Image (cartoon, rainbow, N blue to C red; front, side, top):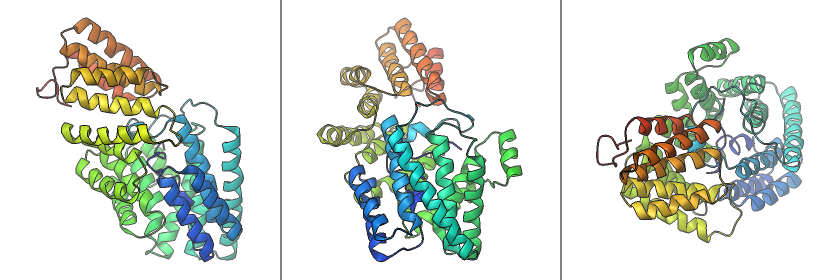
Length: 405
């Protein structure tokens, strides 16, 4: 249950903030708020969502939107801003995280509690209404996601997650045209499909359905269906396609998102990282050069550790391209900036590659060991696996069998 919002826009954060139509002005303001959020203009998003509440105080979606932007901001402040944060294990039951901002936590809980209260009232009045079931499922799903990603208590939100799943399955049973309900259903199906055997059995007993094919079908239908959650389904697919190594599919989505949200510099980061995973070094480097320039010119608040992540990514592309000197400059700069532990760990690993290329095997092994330790502490199994690979066999560049990822 560790799929969480990306600062690309947020997988399941803003997605869970949509609803059945309120009055037209509230809907218009909420849509404007989503666009601001996807463009990383969080303050403008908050202002728009606040106006949406004022325009229709009885609309659960407006309160979910306010809760969602608080959640997204918390994750942004923690530096959970990239696909890399969610490519590793999905089975760790609890994750140690720093305490959230009390103000933002209160903003989330106050608004989501009001959203759920209004949604429950609607469902009680209209038990056969698909929109009422959607509202309840979205609210409890948001609670489950917050518990997992902010509090780090992955299984504590299990009951809420189960209800969100059931409510949105009910939505599709009542109204099969509501493809927007496929976001929660598809996401949880994919999570269950990736659990180990024991945990998957427990999820089935608890009522969660799995299956990669059914998960992708639900998410792809949602991504093709015009709705407030269409962008969120696309972002979820970017993550899943990267996990499944379907890089071309992820890149097609990212291309469209860059056109739609040109102020979201993190879309350039994700495109470059995806190109690099696909082994397209020159394309990755070009995208990351553009992205770093955007980052350095952008005067808006940055995510925690974002600078270190940018220079790690460009440095990694430069290592793969054989550009040793500029790669070292980027990587050493990354180490001088505030950063997540896994970012520091992977930076050490990339510096180890440069040491291997320079024939300094003992120093390279020390760098890989240090990198593995940092990645292990920050729950980055993929980083640990890469470090262990190069500890066994010296890195020899991307144009040799030993160097290919």
